[in-house]
Length: 441
Image (tube, rainbow, N blue to C red; front, side, top):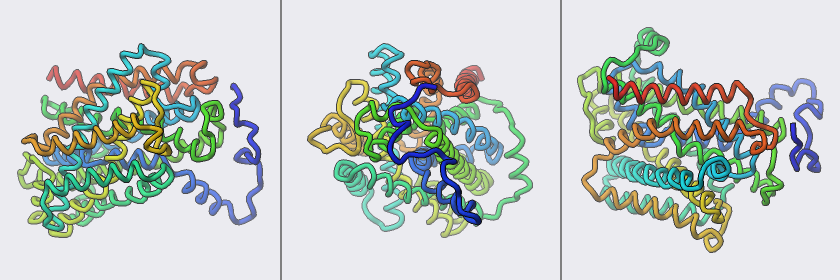
């Protein structure tokens, strides 16, 4: 394995370099585990944005509990993909678009970056709409005013605060997702039936069910998360003082192990929340024949007579929390992709005057999302079909990522192990198959 410039950094030691005091092994393990949590947890939680919540709610309302098994399937797939993207950032010292630019024509990478910007802008619009609906239901504030206020406040916060401050806030916002676990538990599900459907995969039998699976895959294994994960690894290293790419090349064994735990925890959390959102709407909306929903407001309002005011408030409050978590991720991932593609200065640690292009993309996508909310587009429908489109596009991007992580030169002698590449390949194949199935059936 090729050595990295920081293999001999002062004060750095291997995981087993120092002895752990007797009786403190468990405490030391948990301390290391929680201190390692960062980009993986943030990315995993951002996956359950209002877009994801809408998609999972539609899945539960339309099909009941028969698609619960998808949460068990997508966890290892999502973990493999996100860890592979993390490895790209850790080893190459640059984001995913920068790595792709070395393997693909620049015009192709640019096209993918612009498609990402367009898809993320639609997602931001729907996320802002979901947050505004939630705020209106909780406080009575005017919906369009909330859209503008939330959009501007999030953009200003991204520009004003540095990466370490933003990352700390985003990690705490991830706790908002527990609202959906509590909501499902408060309904009192039949766990025997739930376990049966979760452990017994059932293939879709019509185009609607196939498109739902494609949407679930598209919102769980989503392109914007690929770019965000890799770029956050670079930001983490910059925060440690590795300001130049040369200092960021390569990764130590300890860093890789810690990130593996981080990604595993974040993706598990993400898919657990997905499981309970599908379960909540399956036990309420689907059970009572409410299979066609148009907005997150309708989902929340339908929960009140079926599951009580408590469930409605939890569902609604969760939308607000995850919206504040997801929108910086959506706008930021597109900004990283475009800035890296066109070799512009980028990073959440940069001042506005030094990274105008980067912050300009963030502002453009957020303003675009605000403007879309003043049209007649149904937010949930826009979210659902953007998830379907992501599900169709993601496998092509996964193939490109495989080309990168299989290249020993690009990966500085630390390419992904065979099992990791196999998992990403299987993920791409399943997403291709789901997309084909949607059209065939």
